[in-house]
Length: 204
Image (cartoon, rainbow, N blue to C red):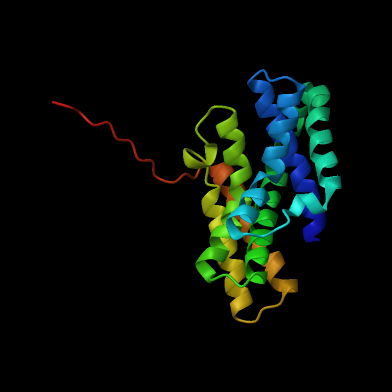
């Protein structure tokens, strides 16, 4: 189940990256790069931070074809995608949970301490979007208005907590997905946000 959701999620993330590139009037090469970075950037950053080599996507070249193909296909389909906005939001939420759980699993398998495992999960979940926004020359959405990183943190905490008390994957995974999807959708529909910090120093 996790692998299937992961594949669906990287396609959705690649398409969202392509749309972001289109809003910045990038050419086809730029679209392909942004699509790739959005879909696979979080896992790449995680692997580099943890020293997890070879990088995950280098062992699955089909992922490269999949995300770049999805990004380029978005160029042709863009005018119709606004009808699928709600579906993209759900797929993005599922992807956030899948990426977060996978990041935790990678760090756990490498024997890292709990705080590092949580950070690995969050890095996998949010860094693709952060890299997308930086390359598109804007402040990352997850840092300014979205309840996104907090959802990843909650998913990691629940998944690891259930694992710690001996709950099996058959319960821990659905519970993590249920929490993550519920929190993300509720945040979008109800407009939940973290408090913002605004500071402008006055020089006398």
